[in-house]
Length: 289
Image 1 (tube, rainbow, N blue to C red):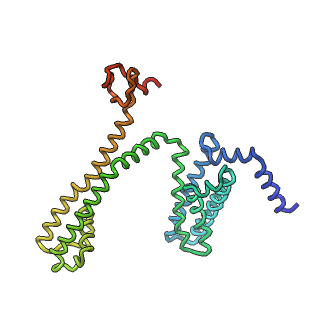
Image 2 (image 1 turned 135 degrees about the vertical axis):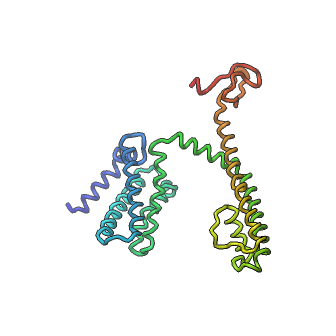
Image 3 (image 1 turned 120 degrees about the vertical axis):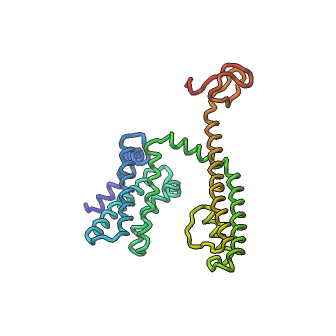
């Protein structure tokens, strides 16, 4: 029997054996078992090492080190290719997994090495493998982090309208400042050659970045620059305040866990003892779980 026949025989056994598929699914997709956690931890380390190699290969190094890096890169690529095939094999809906976010990231992390045969520049995008580290949230069951992350997303959504209005205000402000600075500096300073250039200067100055590639030379221009820089400190604190307020409101919503058994009202303050509606003693969900 040839090697090809043996491989075909083994593949038929694996593909038609439900126990093998279930066990592989438990290891690859599951994180509640020892082998599942071990597999994902090994996968994380392989991802980090492969990304490190992709970064180091852009640095000048002796040829023997570069050859070693190239060999390791192919080892990791073959491992990720086998892992991707196994995920398709174990998945109850292979097409759905292939088109999911993780499935797309998985295939994109494999393709650059193979594409490097035809497009040498494609090798550089191997760093996309770092996105697969997102699985760490699944591995260690960081419910507290996920809960806080959900609270943060809700806070961002709650303050989105205020943030958009603020962004429009800032856009109008930098446009106005840029136009004024063009009128003041346009005839004296060649760097303020147009209103778009002046708006760019206004953005850089208002955000207190200060690259220094465009600077005013007239006394009036420098005076306006001072005002814009001082204004920038107050402007930058506004979105922080919006987000902080929204986050505090979300936290306050979560903390209201007490309910009144007498009238059924919910959303009582966490430190309340009696119902604010009927005056009855409150029931605390946290203490009675």
